Length: 575
Image 1 (cartoon, helix red, strand yellow):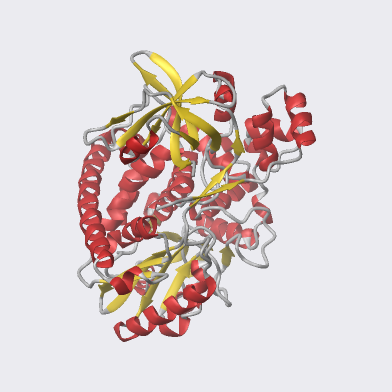
Image 2: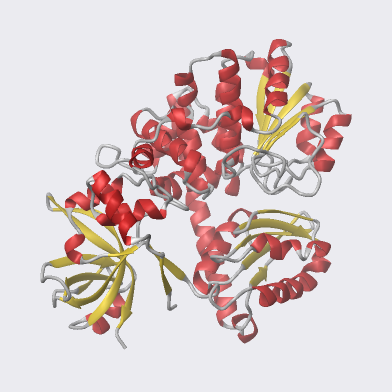
């Protein structure tokens, strides 16, 4: 599928020159900093060397005073506290973080956690969970990574004399639940300076406030940042502002002294910490999926058991189970994705739509979110994958760059039992009889509001550079922009009018990749190598030709020699 290149608007040349001079750095670095809103040497210093002192005051979050007061009262009165969270990575890490913190201040018998079953209870606060709390004497529930729309469930909890504190980060509805405290930076009446915390991040702010009130050592609190970093990376929240600071120090903790549970996952996933530092990418593609697999295939409770484990033998046993779940998840994901792609490819009606909405009652509920993501990549349009669960049609939705999926789904709310999420990802449930009307209405809403540009995959390019700009010094400075993630992505560059150096070849078991060697015809003749994954079919088109390259940079070690190579994202050929 042809991709649209969008070059970020460069700052004024004079501003680039001034900042480059102040920092004694390459103009490319100054350009990238200015694009991120960093205009002074002091701001650059704070960006390159994040400090935990830069974290926002947790007391600025609406209802924080009420939440800490109620938590203190529960601890002082020996009340039983139940921590309730979603079954995904963000939810399970949030539950683990709260549990590991509170077990230092609560009696063991007064503290427990509850993860709803994906299949029998579904997403969010369940009546079964509230009944469990009431029947087992829990007078306080800390609900994390969900609950912002649980108006009726919280009302029922109040009737059963179970107090609720909500720590959520999703978009609120028109009415907030009548809880003791509702912590959510997305609340319209919340003046907290940063909106984009993960669910685990909101839970961290609660225990941060609690620690500050009691003057507990912050060093102990910061040991929990490895869990928070895993949630930030896995939940695809922006790695900017406070999230970037938390991720920066969370990665340090993950690399230097991870908790037993995470250390066991790291080892079982095959990451060799002695050879390389763990990055956000390692969390997204290796650590997070294993934690997620527990809730997708069996129970998210397994993930929390591992993340809070104190015994190495138990941790190894659970990690082995979770690896098995992950293998099962991969097989299910692969099978359903293939089936869905085949269905679309064989149906002219489906191919001509602006949306993908597919339902199969036999599809595994635990992997439909992954399948929705894969189909969005394949067909690049808003996608909803649905299956049957307990007599309901339920599913996951994913969007494309620039399109507000949550708004489109909200316009179909008359056909839905419930829905939730944000601009690019959502979940929904409806009656079987409403499926066909929903598909028609959703297609109509999207068709009326989406643009052709949104339906074309887009690559955002940070800057034009020449091949001679690529030096070890430039690369070293680029690494200081890490950790990379949404809204702070690894810089993407374009070099125009490069020429094949007649060393380009196909590589990979099936010649599926392209190992490029190019020269920059407009500047010098120093050759530079790159790899285009999945681009092997372009070999004949590339050989001996001139073209424009779009790429990121990565250090490559081969036979004891380190080199900086281009990771090619796309190639535009001359007309």
